[in-house]
Image (tube, rainbow, N blue to C red; front, side):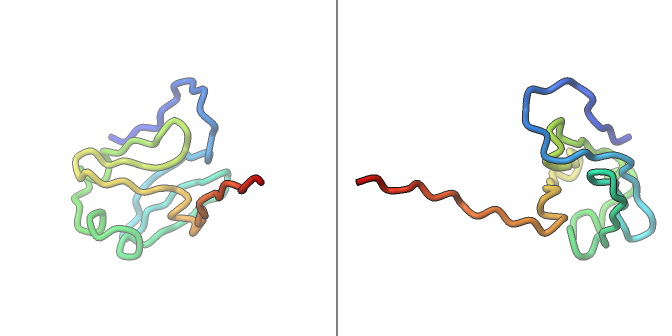
Length: 95
């Protein structure tokens, strides 16, 4: 069965993840207090083809950064689900 880590962490919390479940062809998850639905076909061909046993064996990172399915060796970032793109930070040149 999936688990959400409740271990204390000194890491910066990226997202508050709760209530992850599967409904038909959808991953349903509450992210930062808002329920979201994602179609497996659009987020992961591996999850789309996985059995319920494989889907239900997941771990949510303590920082809220992502979800890992150990039986499938599949990882999905929450930012990726939300369409958040991070640009590399450039160092300013000094004279």
